[in-house]
Image (tube, rainbow, N blue to C red; front, side, top):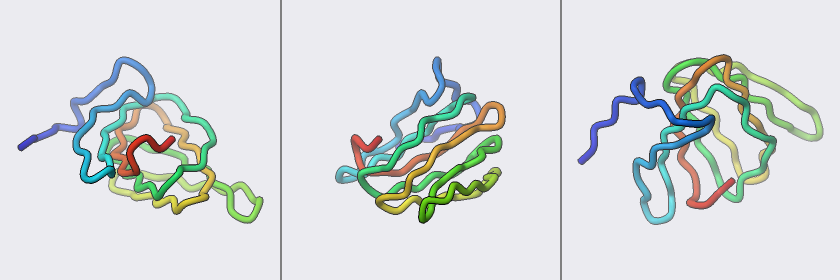
Length: 103
């Protein structure tokens, strides 16, 4: 059993993570960041939950770049092939559920 107080988690670098669980190749990780990630396309599906802070999520659909501001409790689901990049607005804590080893 684990109890994790996400608000107290801070990594030593942007996008540092705390591994919470690996369930048959699906990982659940808590990330801390204050810097943007990089544009990427995941190998599998991704669930991205903002636990603390705000994150501007940019994504591409049919060649058009779009963006949405995510706040605490908001969930972004990226299906296979969804190109996206997260831009935190200050420090943020994010729960990410995805296939093990995914970008």
